[in-house]
Length: 57
Image (cartoon, rainbow, N blue to C red; front, side):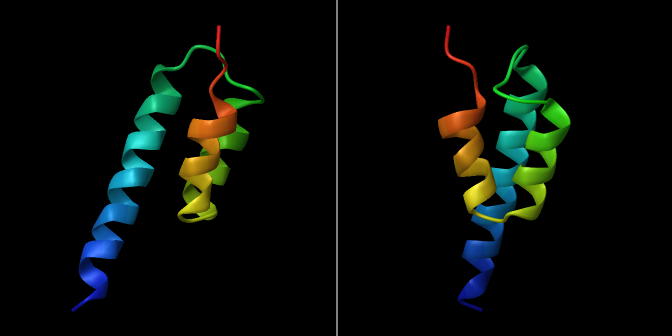
């Protein structure tokens, strides 16, 4: 029962990161690579995308 909020937060973070990935025109590396990282590395994947993946202009 205590894991339900954490699972929901994890799912929400993945969804937000994937949406941000799709809206971002340029990333640091291929978009397919970032999609795999976001989905399969768990909590760290979306965080890595937001810190390292989005190209700052």
